[in-house]
Length: 564
Image 1: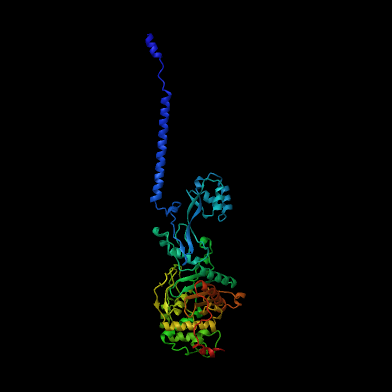
Image 2: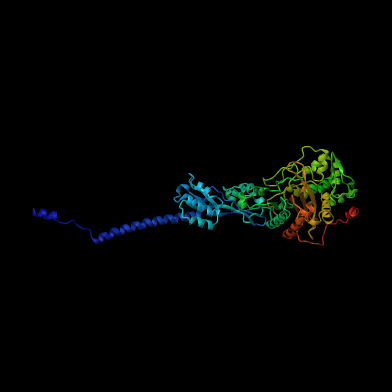
């Protein structure tokens, strides 16, 4: 019994201190190994992503529904549109924990584009996520973040930026919130700009941003000082059809197109359809030369009395009261003689020349924002006569600019393009006038500026040639408004070797000090052309030279008797 009791009372053996340290060491090593393994996996994964992952579209992670877009540049590589990584502010209405009415008021104070009531509606919505602001500046992000509401979140996502703000807005257009083009070249090039393999390759337009800025500045000044409803300007390369500049006033900022006046989004250059008046007269003369109706510059046309058309009469603003030569028809802008030439041409041939210049269809250019001309349903004798001096047929300013390009470039019509043409290349064209006719038109257009109604378009050293056109504006209720004009000057320079067409049109200018209280094209549109050429010519490499000019010595005697 004693032995058994002694055995039962004996204490259980205890682990030694050495054994405890061994167990602790083993556990520590296991944790270290586990930590090292996880770290190694992370490092290996990061290395794999660094080496093998294409990170060109990394910004799409912020909002994969918004595609990245390639840049749009001008012809010299100046960025006109680009995609940036911008801040957006959103809210999870279901997760808002603060007082929603108070939060709505604070948001309105920081972002006043919405009312407090609108913010309350957003915060009360049964939605998982709603935008509060897109393309937010960092200062706004910081201010909203300082509200301390956990339901408000901040993300980075691609946004389209137009760094030149309003410049070339009608050409560029804009994109929607989903990152797709809805107007202008953004819409035309949408597929190309979002193509995954081409996002790093910018698309170059034909626009020269320096010339564009010049044209816009001159046009905006003229529209403002003459209190016009609007205006448009175009500069075109006559050898390639490239649009070097295209402006429409009023303009808008594509960065905020949705907040712009809808009337400002209207591109008068390609959408506005107007009767452009006497600017048609050189086209009528050129067509008559091609048809053999005009056989000599000395050929005389009766302008002694108005031409009756039913109960109306075609008359001249400054009648000469006699038969006049071809140069006199253009220098003095005779409606009577132009109508007589068109009458001899006849309906078929007049239609043929206008069709060859595209006047029966929407203007040839990439933009979707184009309007069809107002082409007469029937070509009566009255229609034929009035078409000879730019009435009864309404076209866009771009139609006319392209036609003048064909008049002076040797007779080849080339459709306008907003895409840069590589050096040595040109858009396909078709011959509409002979070289001889084109050469003669250069002389006549230059004569109009040196001796006729286009004197105020002269830019010393640039040998400008062109034609004025003043037409009564069609009234909203039908008929014509006798006190409201559409004024146009279509020009080319330098006329001894034409390279550029410049067209300016003013829509309903008012008599002001800026136009000497005269609203004809000679006082409204022509001076704008002069200033634009003087500023833009050197930018395009056309250096003024007063020692050169078009040789009009053979035509000058035909003007001697023109002086009243």
